[in-house]
Length: 600
Image (cartoon, rainbow, N blue to C red; front, side, top):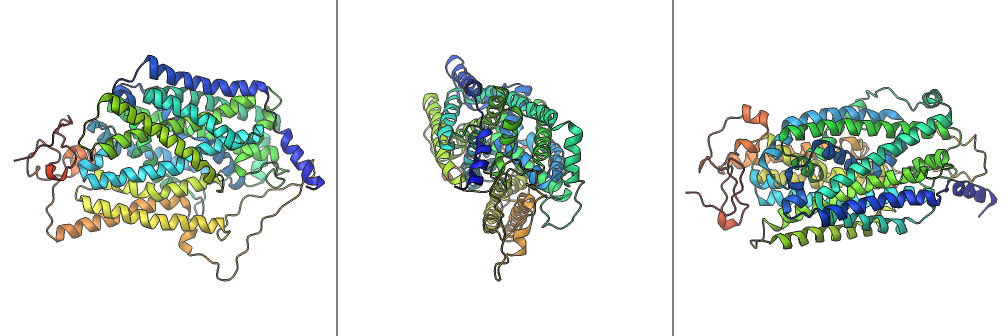
């Protein structure tokens, strides 16, 4: 190692000032989470499946809203969003317009349908509206998305912990994951929600602390603003109509709307907690409070990105290797501004891990619901006792948690987190939203159309997303970042410049240059187009059409769409063939029928 490299490495280690007080704060956060699991698992026992998965459908609006924000804002957001601003500017902030539009569509279109049906897994809806094949397709998509996403959620805070302590990520991740698996498996949804309430408080406090102290150290908000304005990081809306532009007002608002609609409106991890509220009015209020909370937290994250540049405006830590990865920039800032005050870095790291724990616990709980409701009940006639159900749910939590922990080794080899996450999610998110939207908004789409449309959308988006990521990894697609310099560095370093070579024959298809913000929208539209086309072809071929009952459609569609009553018995939403072992019918009052009934 050269002398200059030694100096840069020394500067990096000077940032790692995690004291015993910080460790105490961090361990205290984990202990609180474990205690909540013990309380709800052993002192407030979850006696039924309904208690374990839905909190008895009697949760309160404010705790659920805080839980929704906590679980959605993972460490990916807390670390990825500031990095986005530091590298590319504030254009990403306009995605909050998409969040606002999402709240309108969700409360008026999707949420009323799911809440009125009183279901546990939102994939139950797909069997009511279509059939078990479509239900299984949706459940499998959710499972693979979750398995791909959770290792990233676990890895990101471990990266932050490594930056401020030097502790290897493969040492800290097992410890934190085991705590999360314990309290989730023991306490069910009640434990998940109440730990989320504690963890979102820790998150907001940590980000506010960094923002306030960092601003003071830099010299005030005026300095932050001026340095970012001079570098071009504070941006007006980009009205560029080209789909290849990375971030524009068009893809952030409209592409962001579809991304958030899928993530919040038809995603089991989110819908499950809306269904835990006793009334539709309460669920709608939870959506509103969620949007307010998520916007506030986004503002903190984006401002911290401006703060990182204001602090390191003349000495980029990425080029000097003080920060080993882009997503270590915020932890670097934290140690720079809070490192001299014992306990405060511990508060920040506890906040980052809180974000990961809330996302992980919610996902594990939701996956247990999907395995029980969508993989076991529709295909196995044997009724499980409450004790057997309890062991199945807890077993799923434990096994999935261990699997995702192992997959962290793969995530470690990947690139920038924010874009990577949204790109890989889009492979399944678009088709999934398309299938649910056809069911809720298009009464003429049948089961075969929904299934073929979903599978086509998945195949096309998998090719598109993976090809684009491969091209980015090989340097064939490059997004220029804002100017960075090392002219003001006070220490020696070895500058390593990355040059992208585009040799003859290496040019990629123009479609791969399309912004990742359009992926979910394209996947949903493609699924719908194919689904509608196949359904029309089936109708032309003379296939019998069974119209869906009104409660399976969005309220606005119920008013606009008038179809003849059910041809067999209008008391039932759907009549199933017992010989095919399809899901049980459900009557118009939404009370489940336990036996398969043949209609005369």
